[in-house]
Image 1 (cartoon, rainbow, N blue to C red):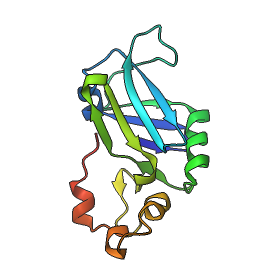
Image 2 (image 1 turned 90 degrees about the vertical axis):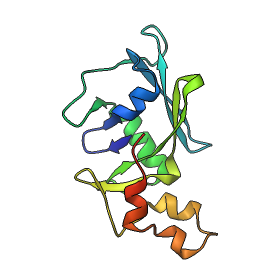
Image 3 (image 1 turned 30 degrees about the horizontal axis):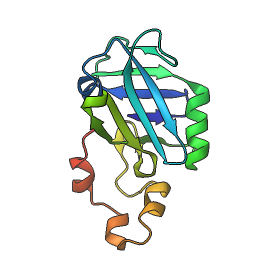
Image 4 (image 1 turned 90 degrees about the horizontal axis):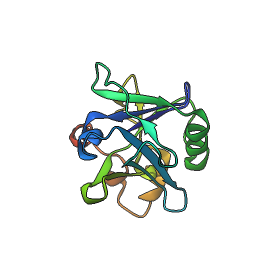
Length: 146
């Protein structure tokens, strides 16, 4: 999943929709205390339901939710000049994919930036070795978007 503050856009990738069982509707769940965002399959009448649109040429769907995107950027202390990508953890039995905000990677033009690490990701790992704070481009490439 990616967030872009410029347009208030959230991109959900095909792999997330597959994990959710190709739902007709989904909703976002946000827990700022746990630094988590989740995408959950739901019914049209459920609170916060969004209809899954047609996939674009990148096999993803986008939604514009300016207030939510601004809130996440503010809470995560993200740089407003960057977009961020998060890797999901699937919970198929709950039809949910969870994303750790502190593990967000800055992206530019759809690609993870090679020489930067998300400030929240670095802070989360501050007690680890310096090598863990700066993953190699190969490590970043191994992280598929869920």
